[in-house]
Amino acid sequence: MGNFDMAIGIDGTTMDQGSSTLYSKLYPKLFTGSQEIKLEGIEFKVSWNVKSAPTFTLSAPTNGKALLKAHLMGDAFRYPVDTNTMVETYMSSMADSTFQMNMSDVEMTVSSSSHSATDKVDVTIVVEASSTGGKMTLNPIKATGKTSNPSDQALINAVILPQAMKMAGSILSGIDLPPLSFGGISLTAPALIVSDNHIVALANLAGKSVPSAPFPSTWPSSAFFALLSSDAKVEMAKLSTKYIEGKSFGKSGKLGFKIGDLHYNAKITMGALSISDAGPTSINFSSTGTGNVNAGIKIGCTNIGLNYDLYAKPNLSGNIGLSIVNSIDIQAETSNMNTFVLILKPTGNPVEWILSAVTDPLLQAITAIFSPLITKLFNGYKFNTGPLPSFPINVEGVSLTATPTNVSLGAYEGMMLASGNVSIS
Image (tube, rainbow, N blue to C red):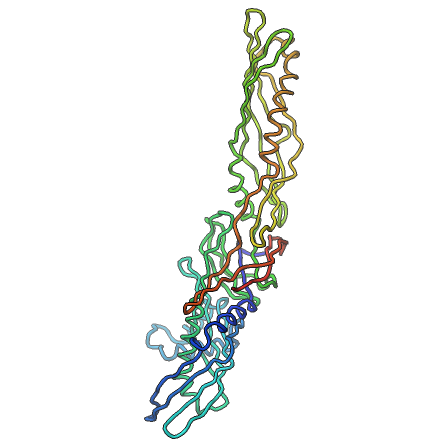
C-alpha cells in the first residue's frame, strides 16, 4: 500500500468527540473570559464566550497559501529570502500535515463607557501535526476570524484570535500521542500526517528510513485503525517465537530384549524458525528438529555401542493466526501443526542383526516421548502482542483517555487491519 510498516489513525469524529467531552468538563473555565484593551485612544472591555465545543476539519484550509503569506509578511525581515520563496517552502513541507480547528459559535461582547454590543465570531485555527525527535505534537499556528460587522475586525484581531490560539494550545497540548509500538518490534521515529479525514502516524521497521511522501490518499474509514505490513508481522513473529530456536528435549532410558538390555540417551533440538507471511492475519513457520541417540547393549560380557542421527521428517511447520482478545489486545496463536515422523539413521558400523532387532522398538520409545513434547511446543502456543494504543488527554486538570473499542481484524490493501471505534472517558 505504501512505504510504511505500521500506521495508526483516528478520524475527525473522534477528535470532535474528545473536544465535546472536554468542553462539557471545562466550560466555562477555559472557554470564557474578558480583557481590557485600548484601541485608537478608546478603552474597551472585550469578553468572549465559546458557546459550543470546537470541532475539527481534518484537511488543510483552501486558502492556506494566502494565510501563510499574510502570516509571514509581518516577519519578512527575519528571512534572507523573499516571502514567496518562504511561502512555497513552508507549503511544501506542510502539504500533508495541517488541519483546521473550528470555533464557529464565539460570542464577543464589547463594552466602553458609552455603549455595549455583542457580535458573533466564527474562528478557524490552522493546526500543524508534527513529529520532532520522535515526539508527536499538534501545534496551532494561525487563527482567523469572521464576523458580520467589519468594524469589529480590529478587536477580533487584537483579542479574540490570540485568546483562541491560547485555548487551542491548551487543548491540543493535552493530547498525548504515544510512541508507536507493536509486539516488541523496533520502529523508526514516526511521521505524522493529515489525510482522508484522519490524523495518521506512520513508522517503518528500525533500520529503514522514516516514512516519507508520497503517502496514500485513502485510509480505512473507521474511527480508529492500525495497519501492519507483512514485514512487520514477520518481525513480530520472529521475536515472539524466538523461544523455540534451540529448544531441546532429552531422555534416557532402558529397553529389554532377548539378547540383552539396551540403555539409551536421546536428545533432539529445534532449529531456527523460518517465518513467512500467509495473508493479512496469518503467518507460516517452519523449523528443523535434529539430534542423536547414543545407545549400548550388553551381550554376554561384551558392550556394543550403537549411535543414531535423529531428525523429524518433514520439517516441522504450522501457522500463526492473529485475533483480537479483550477487545483491544492482538493475540497470536500457533496452530495447524503438520504431521511429522521421527527418523533414526544409524551411524558407524554396528552388527547388522543387532540393528534390525533394536532400531524399531527404540524408535517407537523415542517417538512416544518426543512427539507429544514437540507438538505441544509448536501447537496452540499463545502470545499477546500487547494492547492497541490508547491516547491520554490531560487539559486544565481534566484527565481523559481515548481507548479503541469493538476492534476487529481484517485486511486492507494487503495489510493487516485492526479497526474499530474509540471510547473517551
